[in-house]
Length: 397
Ligand SMILES: Cc1cc2nc3c(=O)[nH]c(=O)nc-3n(C[C@H](O)[C@H](O)[C@H](O)COP(=O)(O)O)c2cc1C
Image 1 (spheres, rainbow, N blue to C red):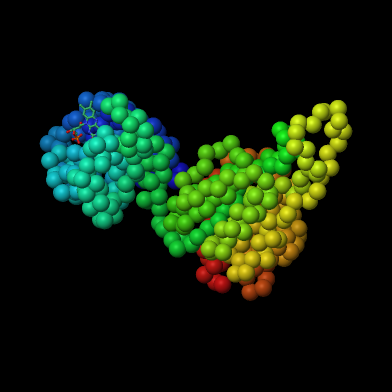
Image 2: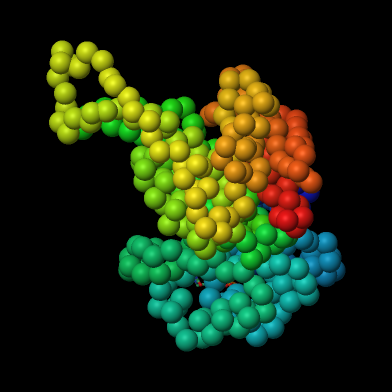
């Protein structure tokens, strides 16, 4: 519940894209936020106050003079203002401090983070007036969610489509998250790797990528510049600075080596294959001819990265059957790690593919091993615990 009890004022203005706000309301509510909707007069041509009120489960406000102190009350109590979709009219009015209805007046009185997701015809979006207003508002710290390019309601093509609700949601979460990892450049690896037996058959493992994706997303939300290097997964990549898709263990190793010199932290949450089929057949092999598959060892990414000069602070993951501390200590030493995260992949509740996890963090302080075990928590919560521990250990170094 990343937005638990956060009070979000949602301003909806008169754009054809207003119907897409329902998806955003659902995301915000599922994340635990309380959403207080305000509709402009013109927004009511596109969505009804009743349907918005039902979706938000909070009274919808439309008229400034109906509840006379609402504009100040909203500004005083909210954690964040989100204007979705935002018309050219709203953006220009807000940029110049015009306060002629409830949402513009409340926006002007508000002192916290503001997220604006514009939606309009591309000619309007690219106009000098709108661009200048956006620039002015960015300069005072307003967060903009850039519209997408594509076909517009007017039948034209161009930049002006409302950004996806998930991208707007992410901007809202990020605007509410303390940037305590600002200045860090973090590489996260995630997912399995895949090695081919022949041109169409391959071997892989059960890793879902969820833990690595959760780490990358949490780090990005906390202000780090994140590169996520991922093997093949079935989950949507999170909004991070750079996403690199790889397939084999060798490709993952190459990406890690390429990115490492400029990184401050490397988190190896991936489960790269330890073995690959050998030989590889570059055509589909007749099944009657393939009696058995021989394997050879893949490169060990963590061991290889230990050779890098000025290696970043490196965190390895030990996906073991059972929480084998001694083996984890051995891996810690062999691979010269700064921390190792141990998780039991055989557990029913957590591990590969699950949404929850329980981990043990193993690290050295004054040359002695220390261990910290978490409860079963969501991978998002586990990610934040790991990042906070990394931050703490880096300060000590
Ligand atoms: C069918 C229709 C669709 C519109 N869509 C948009 C839009 O997507 N973006 C925009 O900036 N204005 C759009 N407008 C124009 C706004 O509704 C108009 O500028 C209005 O004054 C905005 O009022 P508000 O900002 O107070 O909600 C549209 C108008 C019509 C008639």
